[in-house]
Image 1 (cartoon, rainbow, N blue to C red):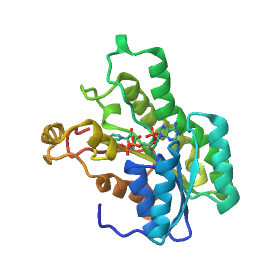
Image 2 (tube, rainbow, N blue to C red):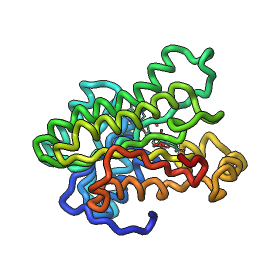
Image 3 (tube, protein in one colour):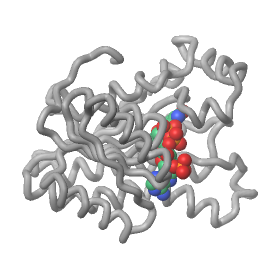
Image 4 (cartoon, rainbow, N blue to C red):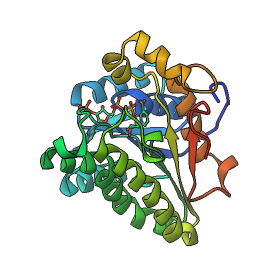
Length: 255
Ligand SMILES: NC(=O)c1ccc[n+]([C@@H]2O[C@H](COP(=O)([O-])OP(=O)(O)OC[C@H]3O[C@@H](n4cnc5c(N)ncnc54)[C@H](OP(=O)(O)O)[C@@H]3O)[C@@H](O)[C@H]2O)c1
């Protein structure tokens, strides 16, 4: 999907978790394809730098700091987008992740709540923010980042993360069910391990190669392997696809 050309001229895309990784690359690709992009992240430095880099490359980008687990912060961020752009065409929920890998018995309640909030509640809150906008426009696209960890169980995940991502896949179907009548599509991708900054920081080259060997293609994903799907699911070409989670994992799991 890396070289596919898309045209998002005159469209407004909001990308969460856009300070780094798949969200950042998706924001860059939307901007290259002509969209006006709003990058949302809790990391002010990374988010502002990502938006600045897009502007320096000639794109139209703005950063808004937001804690996606807090409803007031989310409402404020989307109100700001609406005030500046007047509409929202695409929402990409890429913020997420986990840091601790513990068994269920060892997982502190606070860790459970924090990971569920970061990965699942955040999608609920951003969806609540765009639903009235999409209803009014009678159009809109939502692309969620699920995970292979939400489709199956393996040793490189964490219980709240896997449960939250399974929830994201379910919420994707539920949102599609509710919003189809407004011309809105809602889909997700479930990535396998992808060479983002965070993955490179926590898994050394040998570990990344080992994980790659567990795929049919013999390598872990590059960020563009995921960003291409994000753009495709927001593009007119995918207009009759909704409620689906696309498993983009190099054949590591076939469902
Ligand atoms: N990379 C993979 O191998 C992989 C595999 C399967 C699924 N995924 C999913 O794909 C998505 C993107 O992955 P990625 O690796 O590109 O992510 P990432 O590098 O971990 O980036 C996520 C971004 O979201 C931000 N964020 C975290 N909590 C937030 C909050 N409460 N409010 C606003 N922003 C917040 C992070 O900021 P901080 O850095 O300050 O926390 C970070 O900038 C995630 O949902 C991830 O779970 C990734």
